[in-house]
Image 1 (tube, one colour):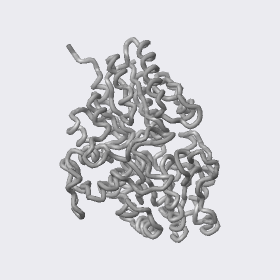
Image 2: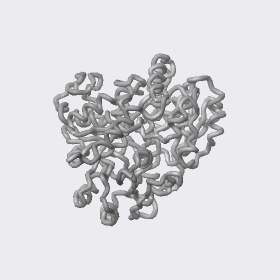
Image 3: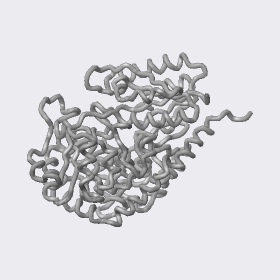
Length: 482
């Protein structure tokens, strides 16, 4: 055995699942790997994860009984106690700890220093968002950007230059109502509240974490984000390893065929089965369906939902629309209200077989891997973004908060496999903008071709550049010759 590595994800399944896949990759390199999680996340860990002889899970008792609130004052104390007990029993101590930079790195720093355990900052998001945050802080001087000016960021691709409206929407966010426009990073049941992005001239919150770490790991790869990985490596002055995308083995093995979500993730409750989704998609022409989903932890405002419903009704295109069970309701999880969230009453009958509306859980990987899917109207959360990139699906982007703005710019400006719904995302999205965006996206055969060419790079399985990055990690911690 090569030694032990601790992996500490932040709160929420969007952080847990990539961390689990990282554990598997480390275990395949003969490291004993211990996943340290709060107990409320344990039900999301499949039993198959624990079947590997070198993987174990250490639970931190949750200081809450119903909806988890990670910023509970006892959360940090419980994590410290758990880690101190764990490290006190280890001989030898772990070779390193890989800690999520979303608060977890800050919470654990003093404990790992006490036991002389080197730390690696872990981004479950992409390299573009981190690089853009850093470059904007260092170089943009936002107060000096004039209307119509494009401010280039030294060291980054020219097309990623920022404008006055970029600064405005990234620091203030969109004027959402009850459901949306939350803080940077998961809020409520998913994680601690932070502002959407660093304000003009503010240091990104992860920079201090990077200073205390020996390296950074990012859930990405060279094929998607090489310039941004290289930029961070130069600026931070430490190794930055792109070790993703951190998908399950089944995802990589199913290239060119349908991915069955039920074989990868716990099948949560939805009103439509995988079989129904396949049957519906099989009835549609290749590349004709728009998939609409904004994930599970962000939301449109209650005023924007009817605009989207009207747009899908007016459009002649086939669509799958995934609506969270608590859509449009105030606060995390609906703010305690027992009433149902938003639902487009009557839309089903108006659009007939042209539309499939899914309430709750949906088999996203299956939908994205089906040849009938021709576009993705997305908030550009990182997991959703790389899942669609890997299956050659172009985007219509509607970022709602935080690093989603940068992910959308990566897709639209750098990779050129998507369009924005509107250039002015500081205002509420309107029906006409959505309709125009849908038509533009699904009619653009060249964009679809570019998306498919990029997706084809993942046809041979887990990226070779990420395999090499993991090898670099191994060599970094090998005992040095005297």
